Every structure is written in structure tokens, then in C-alpha cells.
Length: 78
Image (cartoon, rainbow, N blue to C red; front, side, top):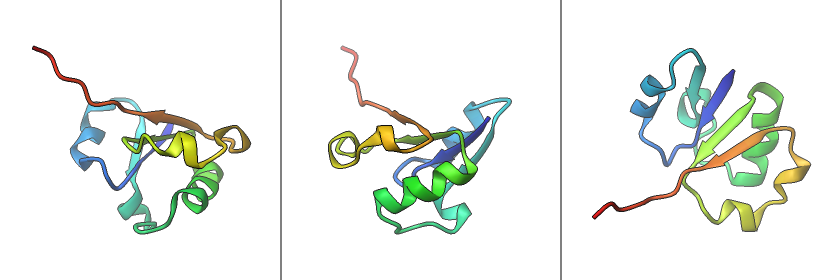
């Protein structure tokens, strides 16, 4: 599976995604590209896009992209 990591994520996360091809947005040469265009580019080469941008689901109609999107949520354990 080809995974695209958003530029707002620590690139070291890629090491934890064993058995997958993981590329960061900056390494792909797409740093600074806005979400709509980024998703359009991503769907051509990747299976999954991982981000922490919670607003993405409100700003984009994700169903129109042929790309799975995972939005990681912050959580605190007490």
C-alpha cells in the first residue's frame, strides 16, 4: 500500500508503518500545496493520505477523491 504523510506530521511515523511504502508530502515535492490540489495529486499515486488536519473533512468533499483519508486525532490519557 502506498501511503502519503501530510507535511504537518513527523516523518518518523513512516518507520512505524511496516510493510507499506510511505512518502511524505515534502519528499514528494508537494510541500505548500493546498488540500484540494494535494488530494487530487495524491489520488493519482497513493492509496491513503494521513493527516492531523481535522478541518480537512469540513473543507473538502472527500468522497470525490479516489483516496482513503485518515485523520489522526490527538488524545490525552490521564
